[in-house]
Image (tube, rainbow, N blue to C red; front, side, top):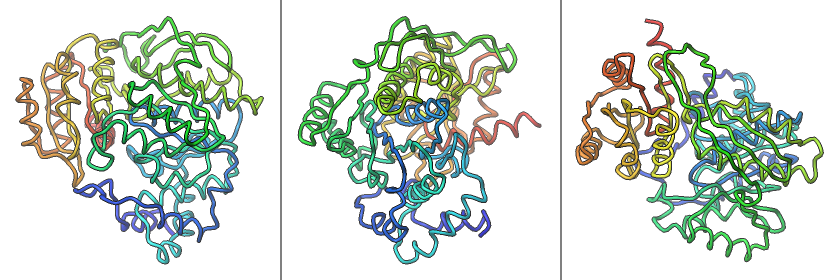
Length: 443
């Protein structure tokens, strides 16, 4: 099977990430049956770290994988959605699987899917488990897609589960109750296996504690287990070329792995919280694996770049691409601009239907010189008329554009080489922008 044929087959499946209406029913029967036909590859993976949450789960996954790989162990990682290529979802040793390997995986599952139909996401999860089993990875870091209890990834048997900060997102599917959302995400807990949790609101914290007691699992709070202090945010300055002398965040830590100073090339104080969660999980894993040491973990973390998460992609003007798509993300991005940019920006924004746009964008208002509104290439893209209403109520000057290419042209025109440009609103928008920027610079 050719890679193009593999993509065509995958794209022929129902993709709830792109449907205009959200999925209204979740069940595990289909993916369970498919994995059974494949011989339960998820059971062949040596160790699995399963990561759920609303905010920061993707970053924590990347941190865990990079740290583990730096310790000399074989790693696999499954994350979603992808930014530019579906192969980003299935990574071995920090790199997306090759086109040839991806095609072979799809070829293996194609006849099985014809017997037991599944969705786009469910098949990618199955492909990941198969890839990890074939490669004999020591650790697989697996990001939950939606919720936890009824997500396809929850058919794995994690050695440790992680629940990052929980907030309001996917409310049409998970509901608008924080306790209810927490209950769904607590489905990743396993009896007798530890769970590491990020900082939570009181009602979420009490619900997770209740779920941990009922499931007889040990709940470990990342911000208590790993102490962090002396956090320094470094200011970004444009016009310095592609490799300015300093950028990111630096902080001191003390935890099970050890103590020292860590400097990340990531942006935002929220990444310090994510790092504390990752370090706590790594400390628990190190109790049974002497290969995991602080110096190695530190080296892995300090070289980490995460696509589409406050990613610096240009310096003249300064360009930051983020996938900010919910209120927690909006607050975090506002803090990134305050802590690392320190001046007003041109915002390029596009969102999907069902998102809490007003609450997401409001924290950015003090930092917006103007906004360029656009539509990501998705059937679920929020119409421009709805975005206009939100930005109009906020009193932010805006320009509406029909394409990402036009949005970037407008943003750079307004920036005039001086005002920073920040892209936010959706993984789909982030991916399109990252595709367009190299083409734009080549003209």
